[in-house]
Length: 221
Image (cartoon, rainbow, N blue to C red; front, side, top):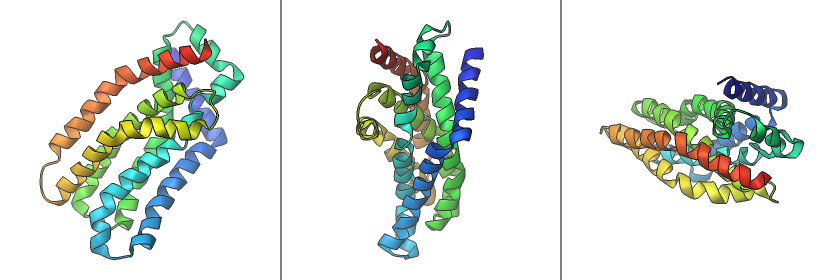
């Protein structure tokens, strides 16, 4: 557990010191959402219908921007080899890096999502469900993104490869996230969709670090 907390503190410290990746993802999230009213027009009814899909698609794309750097700096400076030799399980260290990625990328998007929903004329009933889907779904993005980042480690144009690998895996998350918000808007229960997203999170928590650790061992060997 000490190794897990040390990895989280280290990555958070590096993210706060550099700040470029997290800020770039957040700004991309904001810019993509704010561009849609300029493209489709300011009609409130149109924006209300597409608001849930736009916010979620923008979140998926923004999360992709920083994924390729999740392990790249550790791979370049030799830290990854030390992680492999550490007495702590590599899967636990990977989980710490995914948590740090979520704290610097997913959490800021979660906090700013209601403001963007207001900009997109989202109904007030949808905000609690929007926050719930983002709170459950953005950690899944970081966990799945860790797998993609490990698989393309050391490759050229890793950012595009990560997006090609991870985005297809996030389609169910997008479908149920948007469906939950639309159900809340129409007065129906969003419990089923939220339970499915929660099940995705519970499934990826043990499986994604294991797959990521296997890919990292393969990349270093």
